[in-house]
Amino acid sequence: MSTLTKQNHIGRKISRIRELRDMKQEALAQAMGTNQQAISAIENSEIVDDEKLVEVAKALGVSVEAINNFSDEAAINYFNILYDHSNNGSQGAFANNCTFNLLDKLMEVVDENKKLYER
Image (cartoon, rainbow, N blue to C red; front, side, top):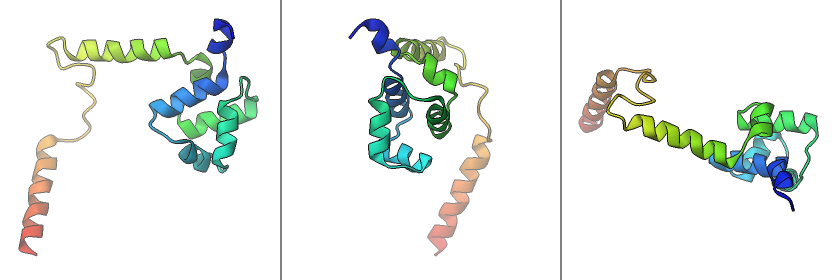
């Protein structure tokens, strides 16, 4: 099998994205309303028809383009870049993504612990 064929094997790309999302074939099958054997068949297929690819992309929470353009090298580079930026002395790549107040969450936990102790 040539390198070009390996790179364009849509089923393998679907499998890798599913694995990166920490999803089992059964979970993907359930999200698509099918069975695990059908997912296995899709992942073993070099070519997947457009309608099925749209369903798979929706169930995985990615775009069709993300599946078509996926490569392990690009994914590794992406995560390496995030890691490199998070250790550069600044707040890192995720600095502004906090959507809650940490002190509020801490106080909620303290209140819950008090209620549990009183019970």
